[in-house]
Length: 183
Image (cartoon, rainbow, N blue to C red; front, side):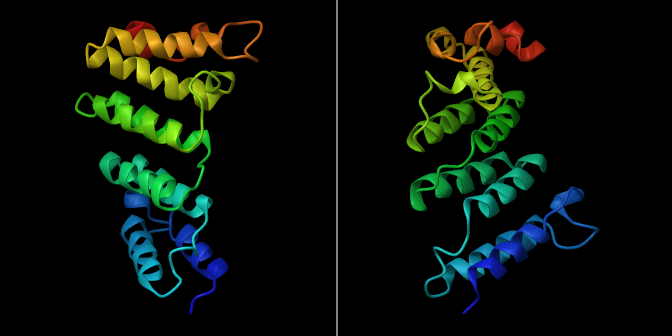
């Protein structure tokens, strides 16, 4: 049986900033996914990996443009493992999906996963990553021609506390030029 700390270290250390998530030309996303699969399919392997390990693989997948695969792993983190990933994990996937014209609907999945993980849309605008998620939602709503969704997300941002001296909806709208155009 592989110890949990060794399994986590192996997966995290094989990922880097190179092409396909490689680290100094070695490892990469495929290697990380193979290790995840092998350990998870072993007896008692389903509870070995930490939220940080899954998050690092989601990060690598998103950076590599594999948004669908990142969403599948994000779903597994929330639904199958009952993890509460940091907002930064959701924000990264949502931003990548919002910027891809063919993936706007995927932002709605990210919003649903964030809500399922326990985050409240009316409160996440008080932190930068939460505003990024809401901005991605506003961009996606504009691409999907869903005015009601865009207004709902801006209303949620406006209700967030802790954004003083600004309002959350102002911060979401000014988070990027794409978000400004969508608003």
